[in-house]
Image (cartoon, rainbow, N blue to C red; front, side, top):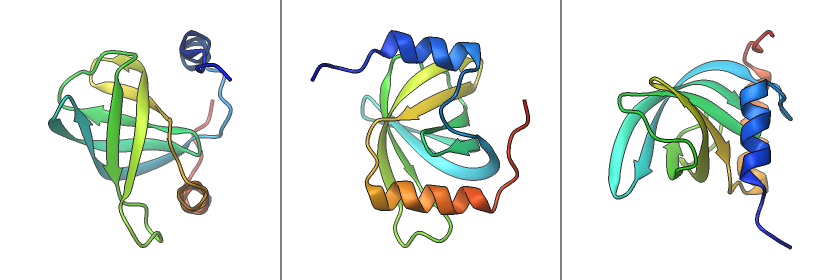
Length: 118
């Protein structure tokens, strides 16, 4: 089994084709890249990834470690993700590693949130 086709996934993110419905939220998170931490806010979340505002841009294709708490889940999530797009300070991140428990926690959290239209 080969590596995922990140180019194909990049096209899906930039053309608006999404596998998971997105939901509006306002969660603080920390993004770790190359040994440094950036604080930010998650403004959209989905079962497959999230949108975040960060104080500094991170280039598309960068692999990062996310730390954030999901209400209703007992522990902070530590999730590997790839930056699918970056426009100014807005970033789209796709989860690369989620346990089934983490995925279920995100799914339950999303049920309480308004969905993104369009």
